Each structure stands twice: as structure tokens, then as C-alpha cells.
Length: 317
Length: 204
Image 1 (cartoon, chains in turn orange, brown):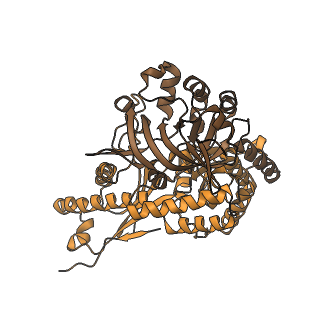
Image 2 (cartoon, one colour):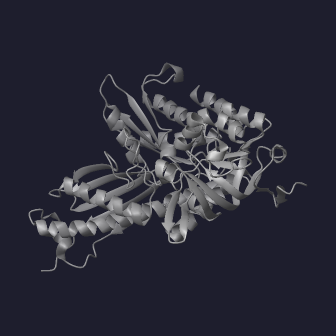
Image 3 (cartoon, one colour):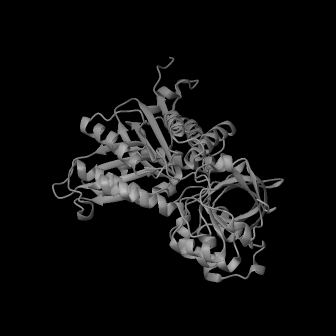
């Protein structure tokens, strides 16, 4: 995950960032934050995270020389370089922007949302991003990637004295292949246990074939309510591919699933081959005795995520 | 290969548009191709429009006969020199499966290009009409944009917007792989069968 540090902001405003009573200061900070979020958009849209790129490079070497799979991955790798060098979007579908924000106490969530929306409009125009927000009733595209519930913004309060803004540009080819399961499922012989979860994930990828641009990164959320597991699954896509699940059982399941999925032979872009996925990440919540929801959220190979961290700095005077 | 329309360079077949049925019959699943000439884009809205409204060929400002319909919603910038394509990779083709069969036969397309493959209806139309499905590289929007030399025109921009309009693009060495041919073969169908066997083993 690329981390931006904005601790070098040349005045004491960063320190006063939390003093929401000081409205003037807040406005000033928010303007800087707005610019930083535009840059966050640029970073996410045009430059793939290092861990994902490394995984794709490894995958390319594994495919047979002269195969369609290898040709596809070499083109993908070349594309990543062209996009980064020219600051151009990696994919024309710049997706649904999904924000996971962690804000320290006292920072207005409403203000933060306002800043994100303003930054979205600017980023859409300047980078440019493809306008993707379509009105459900009129079918009109808003033209600036903002609308009802668009972009998606989740804000949580944190004890840390900093603001963390994680942004994912979620392509919809892969969003469309995600699935929500309610265990048990007789057809899959999937019961309410680890084995049942495993079967759901394999089912999602088997159904998806190459439609969502593999090699995939797969996020899984398990728990009590539909809305909660869906968000949890999506949050897993923000994890670095190299991180290991703290829960041993889940770490093992992630490893096993990655291995299983790559046995399906779907391969890069569905051309057939050894690599169908480069990462599987699982998150859990407690569940209700009656419920056992499993959500599988899939990212295309272009898992575009970026992080902005705004830390509190020791102030001058 | 003798045809002027279809040459072989290294291990790739060069396609110079427009194509004839004869040219198309020479293309086989697994062929890597490089496309030259003018292609048109079209995704969900354009397909629905062509399917529902059935505009006559004369009402469309570009002759679709022999060309490739590219499933793509590009990012296009308006510059003082005209339109410029910034990013233009493929979108998922399966969403237009219910429309494609008739559009292929109605407008004489020789190629449909996108990603993810298409279903049995389209496969049947490819065989009946002499057309191929070309799979280009999903997500490689910057790479593919470099192979678009010029935006030659646009149709339905006001009505459908940038993403859904029909753009006429002049391409050079635009890469794709034939994954469904005019002989009834589909790589997607074959991969699905292989993966289904594995799926059964994994699920138990």
C-alpha cells in the first residue's frame, strides 16, 4: 500500500487539525485535504500498488512462453508501466470510488464527506476519470462521479491522532461477478463451517470464469447481516497481498483457497492458464445463531487502491 | 496467407478492415491478431438502441459492414484539435448477449470485440453470418489507447453520453485474440468445461 505523508505541511495547521472549534482553521485544512484527495485519486487511477504488480510479474513468468495467458500478462504489465509513466488511467473503467476513512475524534464526518465529494468532481475533470454515476430513474450520467450514495464513503472514528483515507477504485466488471451466500446450500453441499465457506468462494470464481478480468483478488466477509458482510468483504480488498491473516485458521483457508482457485484453470483474462487469482483475504464478524452469510467480493487484476495519512505533528510555538 | 486483408507478421495475423466473409473464415480460435483500420465502439445503450429501433444503415454515419464492433466505454477528452482517446480497454461482452445475434446479421459486422466471451446465441450468429469474437486485453486501457491513432467520429454523443456513444476509432496494430470463430468453436466454452471438472473435484 502506498502511503502518503502530509506531515510536512508548512505551518501549524496540522496540529490544529483536530480543533474543530476553530472553524477558520478547519476550512483551511479541508482545502489542503481536498487537494490531497485529488492526488490520491490520481495515484489510485494511474499507478497500481507494488504488491499487486509484483504478483502479476510472478504470474507472467509462470505461464508458458507463447501462450495466450503469457501474452495477456505481458500486455498488462506493459500497460501498468505506460499508465504510470504518463499518469493515465490504468483502465478506462475508473470504477466506483470507495472510501474507507478513519478520522480522529472531533473531525466532522459531514465536512469530510463534503471535501471528498468536491475532490471527486475535480479529479474526474483533471485526471480525467470516466464519469460513472448514473441516475437510476432518469438514466442520466451526472458527469462528475457524484450522486446519491456515489462515491461510496465509510467513515469511522479512531483513537489514533491521525486521519487515514483509503481509496479503492472498484471496477464494475469484477463487481458484477461478486456473490452473496446464505449457508447452508444443498446444491454446493455447503454447510455452516470453514468447508462451506470454501465451497462458496470456489463457486463464485467458477461461475465468473474470465468475465471480471482475472487474475483476481478475492475479498471474503463472513458474519450476521448481509450489509455487514458485503462491506467487510470489500474491505479485505484493501489489504496488502503479502499480509498474513492473524487468525491461523483463516490464514490457512486463504492459502488453500488460492491454491484451489488456481486449479480451476481459468487463467489470465479467462484464456486458460495457471493463475486465476493472486490473493484471497478473509474477514470475520460474529454471527446470529440463525444466520451464516458469506459475501465474496472480487477485484480484477487492477486492484487500484491508495492511502493517504495525515498525521498530527508537533507544533511550532 | 494470400489475402491482402489478412497477412501474417511473426506469429500474429494482421487484419486490415473492412473484412469479407472469406477473410473471417480463415481466422481460428487461438489466433493472435493485430487490427488496422476503422472500428466502432458500442456498449449497453447502443446495443439496445440498434436492437429496439432498428435504424437503417443509412441512418448511421458509418458503414458497419465488414467492420468490428468494439465493446468499450472509453475516456475521451475534447481538445482544440478534436477528440482524443485517453483510455480505451474492453468492457464485459456478455451484457449484450441478447442483442448481438441480430445486430451481427442486420449490419454485416465481421467482428465483435470485447472481453470475457459471449454465449451460445452469439456463437451461432458468428457461424451463420461469418463473424468472429475478438478478445482484447481487459484493463489494458492505456496500452490500447496508444493503438488508437485517431478519433474519426462519433454518433449519439448528446443522447447517450461519452461512455455509451458510438465512437469511430482509427486503430493501428490493435491486439486481440480470436476466442470464438466462425466455425462454431469457442475457447470460453472449452475453458468452462475444464474448470467445471476441477470445480466438481474441489467441491466433492
